[in-house]
Length: 445
Image 1 (cartoon, rainbow, N blue to C red):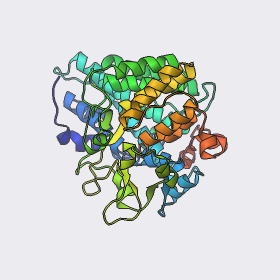
Image 2 (tube, one colour; image 1 turned 30 degrees about the vertical axis):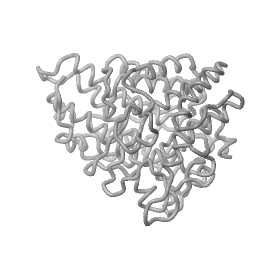
Image 3 (tube, helix red, strand yellow; image 1 turned 60 degrees about the horizontal axis):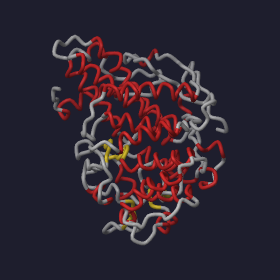
């Protein structure tokens, strides 16, 4: 496999995937694929562009994490931006800027992936081998599957396989012609899951079993398959895929919880988006630099004595209030985003075993994460879901996982005290302003 300098091609890639809503008519500046895909190196630059878009503020650079956490019992908002205030109040309208950014951010990744999937077979480069083409397409499909899964658990009725409220599945390249985008309707939830599974199964077959945690690998595809099946209540498959990753020698629970967030690319990470001073994230902007996204007092009070995870909520010199410290670099803003950690696979396996009635296995997996934090294991599986909900919150705060976890286990309405239709976000209002759109809004909005 040839090695390419990702720093040199990043600017090209950014131009390639930048622009607009996939469902928008407005023309945008972009590189036309027939011009872009004239060599293997141009394809590689486009792949890097997908990671750049994942890192952007409107996706994993801050929005997806803090929209979810403000909406739940993890964080509170103390600033003046209306989009965060609405999330904090648990009443998000279709005009909310955060949900618009997440929708657009994910679809930008999907559109870039579509360009790669359709464009790679036609690249005329004698040095670009068939095996390399298969791997590149698998990488694009893995990231497309991630994008669609993120969209489904935030904007679709993902808990109901019979629901008509899935996603508009944009599966073809726009060829950078944003003035003539095909208007499509929403697919069903089952159809959306089928598409995600197909992408991820292709990715699993074509990606390497690599320990490169900064890019898509076979283990990432397997982790996303585990998560997808968990949402579908396909518990046996969720356990099987989780076990494949847990048993992979490239990954393990990091002995120190704190070290995960004070280092980069530890054995804990299955997929971690690494930032730098030249390619920043905004994860510390809202939580440390500004007095805005702050830990809920109830979260702070809920930790048991001796829990190492409590140490990543603390004070910053010269600033009031305790803050989230999983992203604490507010000088260079080189804070990574933790997309999937091995701890989550233990949670997936614990949850699936619980709903299958395997109480001992469920408890063993939950305790694996709990004891790593320095706490004594739970002695029994009584009130297991309550224990699971708490461990999940203590482990994954400030990582944006809380909302769809509570919805998946049918606890969101009870714990968050929200109306049933607010278990997912509304489709952004701007999508309905496009002439010829075929979308239907989520019920209740």
